Image 1 (cartoon, rainbow, N blue to C red):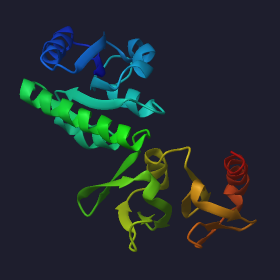
Image 2 (image 1 turned 60 degrees about the horizontal axis):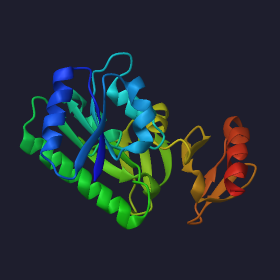
Image 3 (image 1 turned 90 degrees about the vertical axis):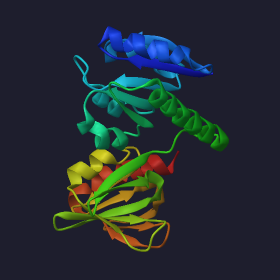
Amino acid sequence: MIRALAMDDEPLALRLLGVFADKVPDLEIVASCTDTGQAQPFLDKVDVIFADINMPIQSGMDFVASLESPPLVVFTTAFADYAVDAFKVGAVDYLLKPFTFDEFSRAVNRVREALEMRASKGLKQERIVYFKSDYKIVPVRASDIRYVESFGPYMKIYLASSESPLIVLSSFKQILQELPADRFVRIHKSYIADITRITAAGKSSVTLDDGHTLPVGDTYRAGFMQRFVKTSVR
């Protein structure tokens, strides 16, 4: 049984989700909320959130982005402009209101597939980061990123799965907002590294698990070393 949370400030929209859910044998809406504050007690009890984006107090997008380990998410909204941002925060699907039962059913199928994949791995869903490169949105597994290097107004994303870096137009601030904070750390004015890939750290440089060496800047040394020691003793 797929346990779901419905979140929308419009009662009619919540009723429609309930009607559609009743037609899916293995889907149960365990709670319906009209704001994000009401949703908090149910987060560890559900597999998926059907979330509106334009919500009072806090948007559905900001709410999902603030969660450390969110359930799967299907956004339901009347606005097409948020699609890219929705997938950046790991949404399984994006339903544009007014959506049909067939569209809802397809979204549930995607949720079902994601849950089956998660169960087969015995792991939490892996974080996917979405970058804009060459006018395309490119999904990248966070665990595939070795380090990030600034390159003028661009960033080079170095991946374990590719010999060539992914080039994106971005800033350090934007990149750090996209990457999992518990995994990536800025070590230099020009570099961000995956701390789990660092095998050795010296006063002025670090060594990654592939033998690559990156510089450590004076400004970032103390904060990085504190995190590195904590990570190493886990």
